[in-house]
Image (cartoon, rainbow, N blue to C red; front, side):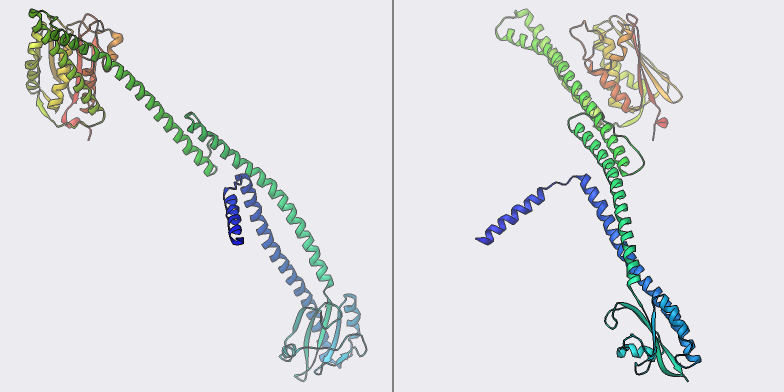
Length: 487
C-alpha cells in the first residue's frame, strides 16, 4: 500500500515537472549566469592554486638562497664561524635556521629554542643524495605552520650534515587570503555587470521572439500583410527575412485563392445564365409537344429549335472542358509545317453553309509557298472560332482570311466588314462568356475567343484585335516559324 502511494505521488510529481513551463527569458538568464559561474569557479580555483604554489615556491627559493650562502660559509670554515651575521639578517625577515650533523644533532646555534631535527627516512635519502629538501607547509614538527628547506653540506666530499631554514607561512597565507578576498570581490562585480548585460541581451532576444510570435499569430488569423524588421546581424535577422518571404508567398497565394474563388463564382453565374435560356426553351418545347399545345405545322420548327439549343449546350460543355484542359497544360501540340492555302480551304469548306445563310462570302488570300507551323487540329479550332464570330456579326458581307510571310513569323488575318466592336470593349472579348453584342439573346458563347487566346499562346504566338463600331473587325494572328521557336 505504501509503495502504491509513493508511486502515485512520484507520477504526479513527474507530470507536474513535465507541465512546468519556464520562460525563455529566464532560460537565457540562467544559461548566461551558469556559464559565467562555472567559468569563474574554474578560473578562481586555478588562480588560487597558481598563487598558492607561486607564493610557496618564492618563499622556498628565498630560503634556498640564504641556505646556499650559509653552506658557503660552512665549507670555508668551522661551524659557528661568521654565522652570527646571518642570524640578525634572517631574524629581521622572520627566518630561523640551524646547522645539524648526520645524527640530526643541532650544531648551530648551540643554545636555542629550535627543536631537534626529526627528518623521515625518505627526507634523509633526499639529503644524502646531495639534493635540497623542500617542504611548503609543515604543521607537525614545529610549533607553528612553516615552510622549510634542508640543504646538505659536505666536508672532504663527505656528507657532514645540513642546513635547515624555516619561515612561518602565516605571511603567505595572509597574502593568499587577501588575494582570495580581492578575487571574490572582482567575481561579484563581474557577475553583477554580466547580469545586467544578460538582462539587456535577453530582453532584446525575447522582444524579437515576441514580435515573431505576434506575426505568427496574425498569419494564423489570416492577416498576411506582416513585415518583421530584417538585419544581417545574426540568425534572427535571417529568420525574419525567411518569415517575410513566407508571409509574402502566403499573401500571394491568398490573393490567388480569392481571385480563383471570384472567377469560380463568376463562372458559375455565367454558366447558369447561359444554360438557363436553352434549357428553358427546350423544356417549353417538350412540354408543348407532350400536351399538344404546339400546332402541327409548328412542331417541326419547335423540334429544330430544341435540337439547336441542345447543340448549344453540348458546345458549351465541350468548350468548358477544352478551356480547362488548356489552362491546366493537359493539351499536347503535335506541330508540323502546314500549307496555308490547304488549311484555309478547310475552314472555308466547313463554314461555307453558315456563311451562305447570312449572305456572307468567305475569301482566301495566300501567297505561294506560305507555310504555317503548328498543330493542324488546334489551328483549325482557332480559325473556326474566329471565322464563326465573324459570320455571326456580319450580314451580306465579306470575310477575308489571308496570310503574309514575315521574317520571323507568319501573319494570319481574319477580317470582316460587319458590326465591329466598341474600342472600349476590345480587351474584353477574351473573357469567358463575353458577347460582343450583349443585346442579342442568342449567338456564340464568349468561351470561343478565350480558347483561341490560350491556344495561340501554346503555339508561342500572339493575337491582336483591331475594330471600330460599324466598321468591321480584324483579328491578326502571329505564329513564329519553325526555326524561330524558343528551344
